Structures are given as C-alpha cells and as structure tokens.
Length: 459
Image (cartoon, rainbow, N blue to C red; front, side, top):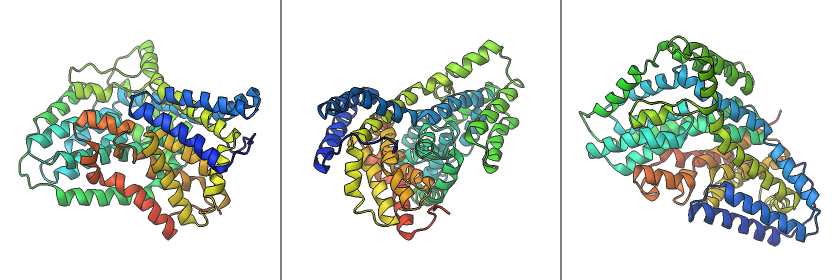
C-alpha cells in the first residue's frame, strides 16, 4: 500500500482533523449504536472520497487508490477461505471434538482459575475463535464459579485471557492470519515469532491464577461430564483425530507455506473422517462451503461444533477489503504520510518505534473499538518505518497482535468487550484487572523493544 502515491499534501493539523472525524464516526457507530463495522467504514470511505474531490483529485485516481489498497489483501483472502475449509474438515475429521474432549478432561477442583485459563487457551487455539470460546465454554465456567462461590470477576478474567491466547496463537484465527498477511510474511513464521512474548505472558498468567485460586477440595463436574459424554456419543473423539494437527505442526517446522500446510491438513482430516462418518460427496461439499452443523441438543456443544465453511469467512473478508480500501484512500490523500512525518520525529530508536506502534494499536482499539482496524491501520502505518530501521516485518506483526488483538476485550465499548459482557454478565471493568494475559502482552512487547531482545532484524 505504500506504493500508493499521495495526490495531495495536507498539513498535520488537517490530516489529524480528518482522521479524528473518521475514528469518531466509526467508534460512535460501533460503540453507541451497535453497528457492524462494515457500515461506518463504507460511510468513512464516502467521506474521504468527498474530501478528495474537494481537493480536486480526479475520481478515477481515488478509485485506483481504493483498488490498490484492496489488492493488498488478496493473499489474506485465499488464506481465510482455506481457514474456513480447515475448520470444517477438522470438525468432521474429529480433530476439534477430540481437542475439546482433552481440554474438558483437565478440569478439576484444585487451581480452579488456572484450569479455566489453560482449558480456554486449549479450546481457543483449537477452534481459533475467542468469542465462540467465551460464549460456550466460558458460560460453563462462569456457572461453575457461581456454584462454588468463586470470584466471577477472576473467572471471567481467566476465561478472557485463555480465549484470546487462542485467538492470538491459533493458525485458524482470522486476526492472526490478518496480521501476517498485512506485513506479507508466512503465517507460521508470525506465530513462532509471537512465542517470544506470548509464552512468558502465558506462564506468568498461569502462576498468578494459581496463587489466586481458592482452596476447593471437591467440584461438581456434572456439567463438564455431560459435555464429554455427548462428544463421545457423537463418535468423533478418536486417537487418530490428532493426526491433522500433527501434520500442521510438522509442515510448520519444515517451513511449508501456509497455503500448502492448510490444504494438506484439511485433506488428511477429510480422509480420516471416512473412518467414523458416512457422508456422501454432496454432503462433504455442503460442509466445506456452509460449515458443519451439530444437532446434539446440547447448546454448548452445538455452538462449539457448528462452525467452519467458506461462507463463514465472508464477514471477515468483506471487512478486510473495505478497511484496506479506506487505507488506500488515506494514503492517496496524503493523510497517513502527514501524520507519520510528525510521529517519526519521535521514533528514533527501536524501543521508541515499538512503543509507538503498541500505543497506536491500543489507541485505535480505544477510539474505534475494533480489533481488525487496529491491526490493519497500525500495520499499514508503520510498515515502511520498520523497513527503514532494519527490522523484519514479523517484528511489526508481533506488536500488532500483542497490543491490538488482545486489548480489544479490555475496552468496555469495543466489539469484543460488549459481547463478552453480554455473555458472561461480568462488566469489562470488573474482569479487566484479572485478564492477566491481555495486560501482560503489550507490556512485554514494549519491554523487549527497549531491551532490544527477541527483535527480528534484517541480516
């Protein structure tokens, strides 16, 4: 997107004014009126087009900048489509049901908050969706917490931390794929590089939850047992169902491109599904396009397993295309360049650059309340600066996730914050101090930046 030439050169004040109008309109639309992000972004595009015409820029040039911006997301779109297929194939192949069963099996009375955190992290990684994890397994844990008189705020904090660990580290996650595609790196290189900050944050969080866990000797696990029994009755829990996951890990270790890795893992899962399911070819086609639909009668299990398919990715794909189109306009109008020219005066070291990137991602979350825009706008704004300072693109993508993806649930008026509060009935400000993983991730990424450790530099 940085190849888009600025057609005008606004002053810093003018550029800041335009950006604030765009951010204000999007944040009000999403936070106050509950609009899906697509509508306010379309309105912002129209506003920017009108501004460009006032600047006497030909509409053809503005249109070309939108197309150039959208074109930057084509690679991500192919990956998103494969993610939809992979989720469907992993469900019918038994991989996701088996991982769910394994996660539910570790629930016990001792170290309750730690178990909630670890289990939701496993499930979140397995299904690649933080909000689905919160709305299903999270509800179950909140119910258990109420029954044993445990802290609902602490339990909610552990749920959110685990769910967004999965959202951040899962190859099935749309935000993870988006962050990698924005800076143009391999998905699994991005995930491996995030481990430098994510793994320490995970273990520190687990220790904190262990220290704070109540002393409970017995725990009524009837609800959890019923979920496990239902997964067994579905006949989708098998030892061989882990093979597609092993294939994915092996391909990652051998640095096989994400496109091929996801394709091979999906094919293996579909082949394994024939060992325990009898589906016709038209049924497979339907599942791969529309996703798998579970009909167990158990709401939590049905919600966890009714997922996947190419069609499930259309929401994200459209949001990416619209956001990148808006980004193309911001560059063509010289708005991003005017703002960066002012900011770059303060970004003279690696530590200050990473801190500036982190606070930009956090700021967009606070103002707009949308994690996709936080990732998209931060990535596009700082890509050239990282290149200029000799840093690899994966250094930028890591900061985008450390301070973008995991911060959204901590904002009361954000998309994730509003959803989580409605599901768990625990206000954001109540669980915020206990969402240790989400709080630690940006702190560690900024600290490592100033210490100049684990920072990927160009050879």
